[in-house]
Length: 84
Image (cartoon, rainbow, N blue to C red; front, side, top):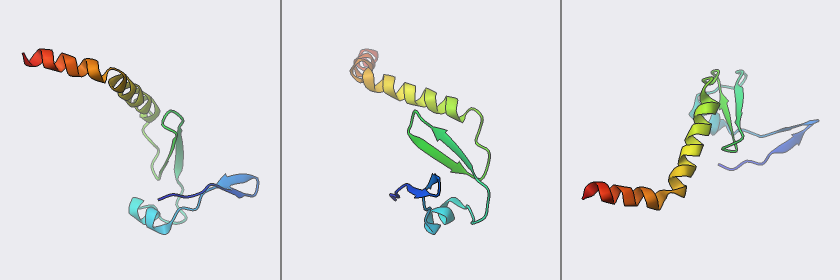
């Protein structure tokens, strides 16, 4: 589902379709937390306060994925050595 960020007064906002809110179990009028993750380029919207380690865990996951991608061939070669 793709939405456009729009200008609302001096701020910016996004229209969240009812179906998306229903799927997440978030009702109109509820307060939510918005947690930015600049490394992943995402915003997390949640009714509950996110785990304080979320940003750290996400950075660790992203770093790990980059290392796995960067050294993919080396990992494959190491796996072949282990099979012998």
